[in-house]
Image 1 (tube, helix red, strand yellow):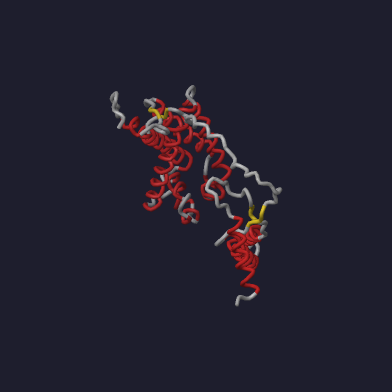
Image 2 (cartoon, one colour):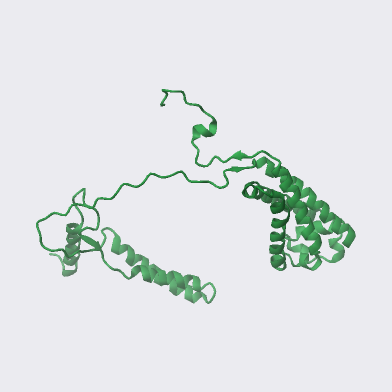
Length: 289
């Protein structure tokens, strides 16, 4: 003999099965819709408290986790193993309503890709090398003329990733350090290659004056970004840096890199093209394979 609680649960399962669509052509939710439930709101409330506790107190995160857990469990019980639905009231009639007919989706038009042509990636590597050399020459000139040391700009560049450079004295910054030198070279190479790849894609969007965009506009923009963030990234560099020389080194990089890339022959992007088209295969007439 079943208890009232078990009987109620069994009746609910039978009711859900009766309301579920049985005909293969019938669209879902024609006779029943999901029941309103507060569990998603409770789960979202708990997740919000979890993140709020990161900036307030860990107790807030614990309370939020509890709310989120209760909300997720309640939400899943409303959906599995059968979704809780309620019947849509309709007038009593013997006419069977046909399922709705939707218009076919329009054919997808080919997506325009901008730019259609870019310079080959190898030109970005060559431009990055040329720009890196030009920047290094200007930076070395600043170190020799203003600071009397060739190693000063190299050591300051290493300070972007090595905290020990920030604790060094002025005399130490003017001396050669093997670890700092290797770190500076690695940072310089990685940043130069990254900017070279950006130039490969962005310069074709400015076909009229690529040297103006790459040699002047872009260096001015990232010099402004560096000026705004330098005190957080490298306070030591902010103390010793000469912004006119810094801007000059960025312009030298931009001009050299943009000049090398702009002289290369552009290639068409492969996005949206078939495999046969990319590989250069030709299909003879009558061959549909």
